[in-house]
Amino acid sequence: MQKMDTGISEADRKEIVRGLSKLLADTYTLYLKTHNYHWNVTGPQFQTLHLMFEAQYNELALAVDLIAERIRALGHPAPGTYEEFKELSSITEERGPLNAQLMIQNLIKGQETVVRTARVLFPSLEKAHDEVSADLLTQRMQIHEKTAWMLRSLLE
Image (cartoon, rainbow, N blue to C red; front, side):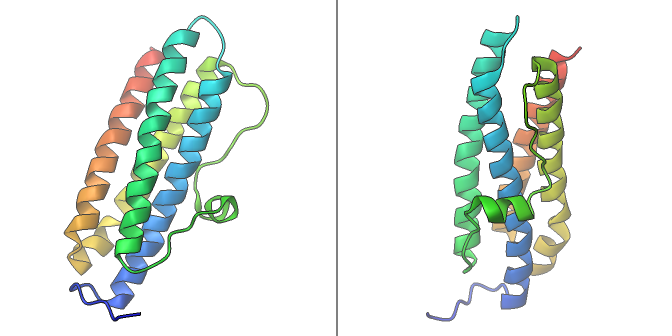
């Protein structure tokens, strides 16, 4: 394989990829959780939540691709198995039936977790002058913060 020289050292790329891999795992786990809730939500808010969760998991499906492709562009393999995601993710999965309100609360926690995971990466990105990853993370944080706000609004 040809040596990579984009102005980011190998050590910095490895550090950034470790953080992006956690972000990918959190995003994928949130995707799976949101898709599960889309399938299994019930109650008076069914139609609203079913459609909202669908829009959210579709957006997350696109996001995991962007994050994984950034990892690849930095010269490293992206994690892509449930085992790797479970090991890397800060988001927990729940089993058993949940009511709509608990689903919403869990998704708020998940959205906020992804924001925190992204935020932790900025010192590494700034040190390496990795504006491309910083731009990706800024966009992801904006989406997750807005989604968390929309979900919180359902509980008021």
